[in-house]
Amino acid sequence: MVLTDLAIIWQLLELKRLHKFRIDLPIFLIFTMVGELIFVTTRLVILVYIDPPSFIHLYDEPTLTAAVRWILFSLTTLSYIAIIAYSLRKITIENTQTIRENQKITELLKEKEHLIYGLLKANKTAATGALSASIAHELNQPLGAANLNIQFLKMKLEKGVLNPELGKEILDSLEEDNKRAATIVRSLRSIFTEGESNAQEVRLSDLIAKVLDIVKPELKNKNIQIQLRVDDDLVIRVNSSEIEQVILNLLNNAAQALANSGTLQRRIAIEAIKTGNSVQLSISDNGAGVPEDFKSQLFELLSTTKQTGMGLGLWLCKHIVTRYSGSIHYEDAVGGGAKFVIELPLN
Image 1: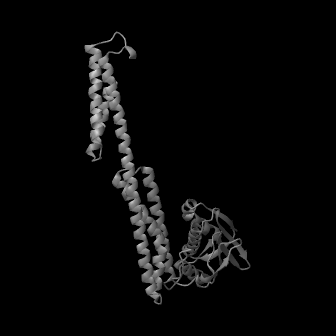
Image 2 (image 1 turned 60 degrees about the vertical axis):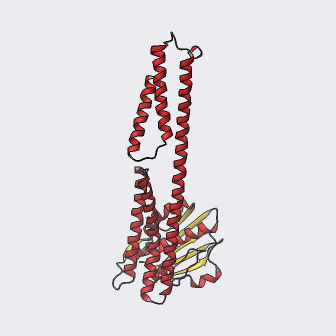
Image 3 (image 1 turned 30 degrees about the horizontal axis):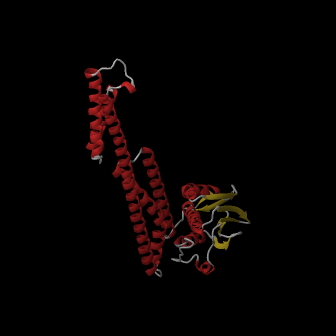
């Protein structure tokens, strides 16, 4: 019972320490624990000084000490009930706050998307409008992902429940989103400025592997499998950041199309082979494909459809590919789905 007293005192000290951090604690719990301390001490005094037994036997225990023991048991039970009720209330409040914050973030992102799209639609014929549209569209995804991670990080910090492992994971995601945004900016700047494109000889398989490292978390989250068939000896002379952006756009389009299609066994196939003096790179999925009335305007500026998730990215893909005397076209994939084929000259 002395150890019990010490344990209760330690618990009360911990509750006092938590109270200093302004953590909302149930007053009922404090009262029950103080009651436990009082009755444990009372039982100890009775057994040792007032009515010491020759030996301790549960069924031969004096009435007074038995009564104290049962009161102590009741208080302990009430303490556990208070702790459980407090935990359930905190979990309910946190879940409600998380849902509300996620809804606010989603609404803000949707509002931003509508505002950007409306602004770009109004400036469709202007060259500056085309440039702004491309930048807004390409940066929207990494910035949107970064915004969600920042809001989540702030929420955890405010609640004081951020552990080092989760913090590192969020910071790694933010760093990756920042790198993607920087790559897009460099790519667009090189496209819309005069001068050299900083083309270099690169292995196509290396470019594809680098892009797959970026999209792997999203593909895994959406349960999408990658089928890869790429010849290792395909070398092209391009600006690697620009071609990486093309591949990234097509993979994102395929992933979005699969996520909206309801297909159970989701699959994206990447194939790169040599055809004469050219390299043929194809990216296909087994989703719903592109509606017939939309195929003719796939690569037009500011043309988009929510069903397929395609927008300004395809226009930018065509702009980059034709910059290197290449071509890009769409065709229906075998067995259903969308397939984009890129042809680039070999080095």
